[in-house]
View 1 (tube, rainbow, N blue to C red):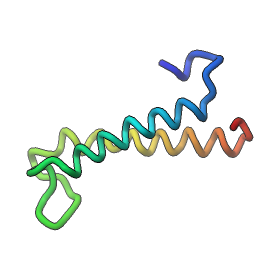
View 2 (cartoon, rainbow, N blue to C red; view 1 turned 45 degrees about the horizontal axis):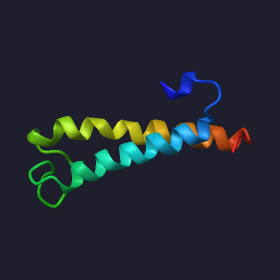
View 3 (cartoon, helix red, strand yellow; view 1 turned 180 degrees about the vertical axis):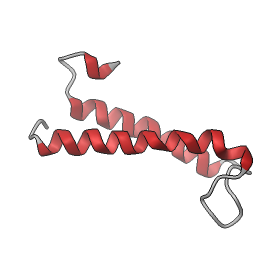
Length: 72
């Protein structure tokens, strides 16, 4: 929603999304039983949390795009 508001910079939106998605990834990694033993691959119980990791990629893409266009 913040991306459609023209006065909020994309860099700020990407950092906020990165913080949110980083929290989700941290929750996934720290939750017992969400990953297989000795791996970051999800267990059947952790698939729902593992699917949220794509947000990290979106945040990184938005940030790199805004920095490369000089919109810091």
